[in-house]
Length: 294
Length: 261
Image 1 (tube, each protein chain N blue to C red):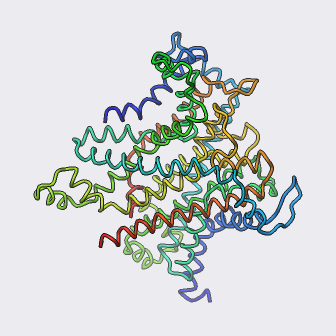
Image 2 (tube, chains in turn brown, green):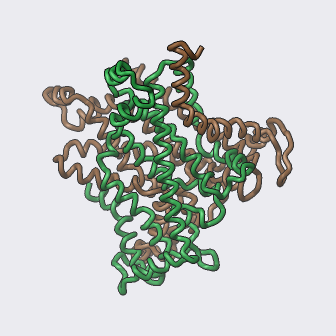
Image 3 (cartoon, rainbow over the protein chains, first blue to last red):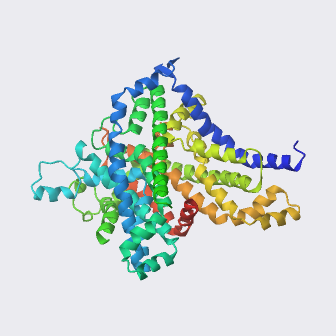
């Protein structure tokens, strides 16, 4: 069978694919399958015994798990749309600006994206910490001496500041790149017909980059649901509950509370939720596309 | 625009200014550089922290990131080549399966992986970081797009000349995708350098930690973070990234176009 031309092709193809496939199976596929199996077991210390879907039933009724979604939900409803909107605005401002200046601003705005979330978390948490914040003297002067900057209630706002800082520039860059692909005739035609720059921007160009915007929504939504690094770093300065975000609850359950199989089950539930939300965003986007008769 | 730019730049400025201060100067909350300048002192203390564990962190970060990037992207190039060059049974299904499994987030795969590695005695060894770093699914996806841009004539000419497939890959194919290779390697390097969750789960001893994890463990005997040293170490953690970004800027752009189509 291998002697045929086709057979030899198959053999060679899999030969080239082998290194990747072997590692992929080892590090991705097998853990997923193993994880599903693991989630069907109860655990006490080193002892594990089969409990079927019991973990999942517990998860459904676990208030601490569902409370953990408050932060991702907050990010999903506030941060994601707002950030994408601002990034679109910024991208259009890039378009209006002279080349050199726009390139300069794009560089500055992109820079935070190159910084790992941990370092961003460290620096920003220090900037807002009551012991080191340059805002502290300002606030004291304005009469807020008794109010702490960094306490648990303010953490979501601080998270907003950090995440906006990290990703807005990058998002604007992505939108800007997509806009570059829009043929200039459309905009020029609209402007000949009397539209202003901003009318052209939002009614002509934006719909043409729908695909990119949708992808941005999805990736940001996935990131919001799985947020871990930034809250983790803030947790070094502010006392946060172990279930502040779903990912944190999963990690803490596994490594701080020793409920490893339970944590694995939660991880799979989180994966499903993430998948469903991505699907939902995709369907919303394609439905909009159909409704407009595109 | 200017205001927005100030917002984006401010933390960089604050970081640079803050690493010139010791803790009590930091507590003075000014945005001016420290007087007297404690930068060298901070660097000295960071390098000497815990008997020079910083050097281990630095070495580990470079090792994990370089190995992960080179091996991972090379393997991805091989895979991309396979998808481009050959028609074979199960090609489309395989591609879909790979993308499908890759969509499962790290938090769901890392926990079981921890158990698997534990039984293999890989925990707290470099392998626990390297093996996952070698798998670069986004890299395979991009490699397929890069390879698809190689004109069929190149392959046909090589075949007529009777070149073996390995020759085709290395001599002809490779130069064609060289730019893409560099772009992916840079992205992979940065990705592994910044990866926090994997080492957090897989490593226990500080000597094996990469910088990104080590800097979160800089504490005084009571367990509180030492602010000025943490900031100084953070600065050196991001310095290579900034250098890479500035020097290799042009390589970061094409990947966006590839990803958009």
